[in-house]
Length: 95
View 1 (cartoon, rainbow, N blue to C red):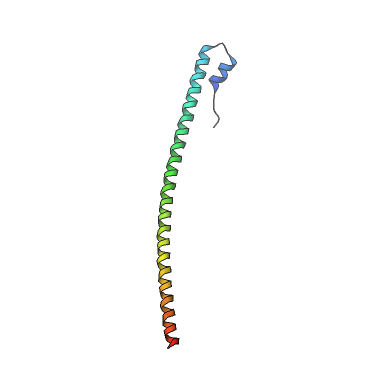
View 2: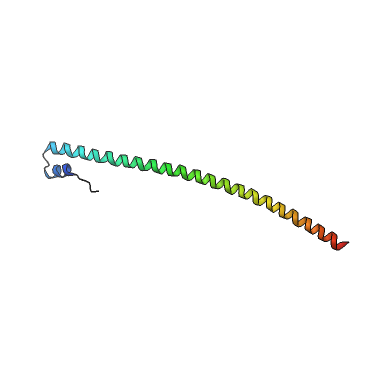
């Protein structure tokens, strides 16, 4: 969308006309207000995305912690089974 700055153009073409200069100033103020609104909306969107990203990251970290705990338990279980298997094998062959 192209910006229409007709009052500003007219004020620049007629530098002595205060009415056109006032209209140009009002037009510029309106444009700045629009840019400010857009900037605020973008900032709010970014904050929302950052919050959602933090929530997802926390959920992922929680799941990794659970998986890590399960792996540690399975490691202990496997070690116990190997120790029991070794004990039974030694008892079988040493008697």
